[in-house]
Each structure stands twice: as structure tokens, then as C-alpha cells.
Image 1 (cartoon, one colour):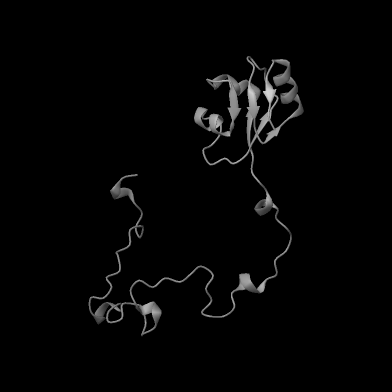
Image 2: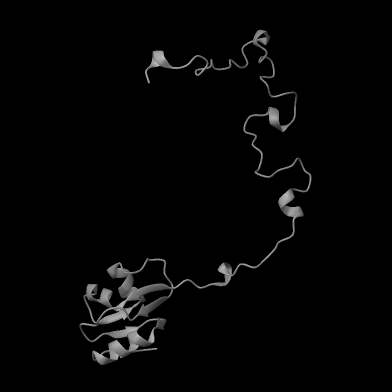
Length: 143
């Protein structure tokens, strides 16, 4: 669509505010008289009802959400341990290798894949299959 093909009324003229009383938006510039709304820098908080008890505070809380009580745990599979340079597997070495995020506090080792060398494992959680595969490869687990 070209500029000359734009339908009439699509581009309205911008309101000229605060430039005399002739255009209807002079003097108080559409802000009314006095009060916080007439001042610069004023903005209402979302859900503010002019001092009246807001609706979200009137309504009762329903249900239960367990997310605030959960302890998130990063997961690492056995096939990913090939990326480690040493034979020690703990929170710090996994962070350095980039297998888990730097803000992770707990890690669980899962049994997907095969173990290529003997690892010394010191993690917070471990699956049964991962434990069996690590011990079968000659590795040890510290708890």
C-alpha cells in the first residue's frame, strides 16, 4: 500500500494540547483541576481504585500452589559426563563444564546413556540405574 492509497481518515491529525483555549485542549490541557492526576510524573498503580478496597484484595484466596515449597533440581544424564575433563563429578565441575546453570543448588544424575570411564561422583541425588552403571564402570559414589 502506498501513501496515496491510504483510506481517508486513517491518519488523524495529532491533538495540539496546551496551546490556547480555542482548540478545547488549552489551559489545563485535558488534565482537569488540581489533584494528583494534574501533576507531572503521576501514574496509577495497576488495580488502584481510588482508595477503595481493590477487588483482588476483596476476593478470597482459593486453592494451593506448591511451587514456593519446591527445591528445583538440575538434571544431568550419564552420556553428558563425556564432556568432563577430569574424573570427579560434583556441582562445581558440572557448572564449569556448562552442563548445569551457574545458579543451580542441587543436581540429580540420571541413568540415560553409558559411562565410558570410572568417575568419583558426589551429587545431591542419583537414580538407581545411574548408580548401577557408575559402579559397573569401576566408579565410586560419595554421599
